[in-house]
Amino acid sequence: MSPRRSYDQYCSAARALDLVGDRWTLLIVRELLGGPRRYTDLHADLPGVSTDVLASRLKDMERDGLTTRRRLPPPGAAYVYELTARGRDLLPVLQALGRWGEPELGERRPTDAARAHWFALPLLRAVEGQGVVEVRLEEGEFHLRVGAEDGPVYGDGPAPAEPDARLLLDTETCTALAQGELALPDAVRTGRVTVTGDGAVAKALREA
Image 1 (tube, rainbow, N blue to C red):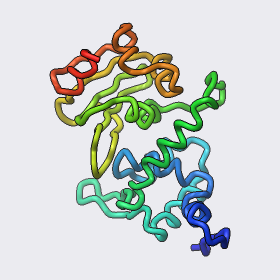
Image 2: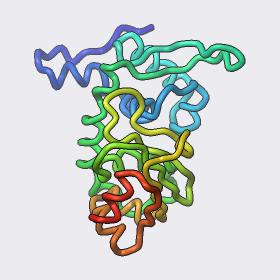
Image 3: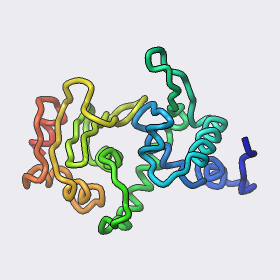
Image 4: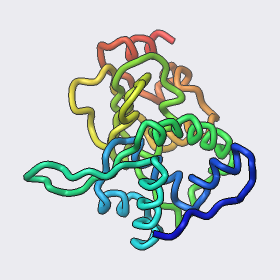
């Protein structure tokens, strides 16, 4: 394992960038905010990263206390990576970075990869309250753990149990929400987002 590079500046921002400033590190955090992931799953959902770079970043993140690695019990018996509490503390950093980057989204380029769950963090900012919200897009499904104080804040695929709300919307609407061009309550009122469910989150969205 190569020694960690440093800016050698007595500044908290520089120290933070010593840990997360390398290419791909924050995107690995984005993926692991959805819960433990196998190496192969991470590689599949980080198109463009080489196997060597991904392995190197994961080792660095484990050394720096951002992630841990553990072996699943049989029959899985695979290793998974997950965020530590310090790693999960990067959620507001990623949300702020995403908000700052909203004007840069623009039109989707032909070379742009997309995954449904990449919309999870922008939508997490848009939904108020506390509970599990299932989101269905053309690209796939994911679920949010709105107001979660620890553990994963979202998950790929349908919710593991009956969610507090289900949101059905198209990619164009989800992109508008992610870009900050459209507020979720307005999207519900105008019919661009269909809300079902009997939980408090669903009722609040329908009544907003």
